Image 1: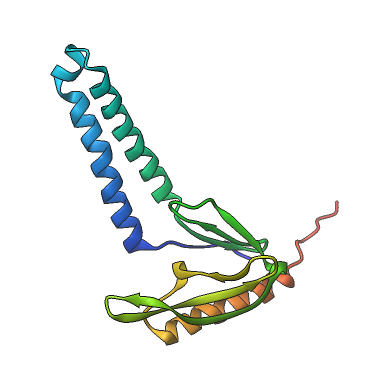
Image 2: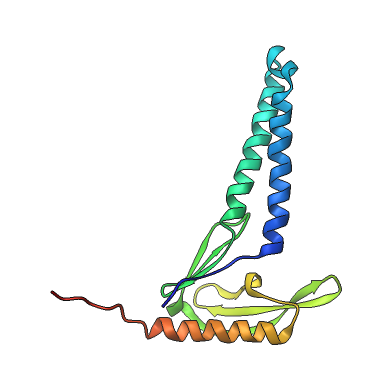
Length: 156
C-alpha cells in the first residue's frame, strides 16, 4: 500500500502568512539597532519571542495534513497534538455536513473509532457532497487494502 498525504492548501497558505508576519516582526524589531545597543532586555526578549513563535508556526504549518498508510491515519493539526488512528480501530466511515463555510455547507468524512467515538476529518472534506462521498469511499477502499496488506517476505 502506498502512502497518501493530504494537505489543506488554503489553510497552509494562511498559517504560513501569519507565521511569517510574526517571524518578520520579531526580526525587524531585533534589527533595529537601538533595541540591542540600548540593552533594552524586554525588547530583545519580545523580538526573540516573536521570531521563535513565527519559526514554530512555520514548522507546524509545513507538517500540517493527514498521512494515510497501511497502519492507519496520522492526523497532524496546527494546534492539537498529532493523532494516529489505526485501521483496526475504525468501525465505519461515512460522510456528513460538518459546518457552514461562507454560507455554504462543508461536508467531510466522519470515522467511527473504537475508544474515541466520532472522528471528523475536515482535512479531506469539501463543499461538494459528492466529493466528500468520494473521499469517504476512497478511505474505505484504503482501509480494506490496508487490512488485506501483507508485506512481501524475501527469503534467501
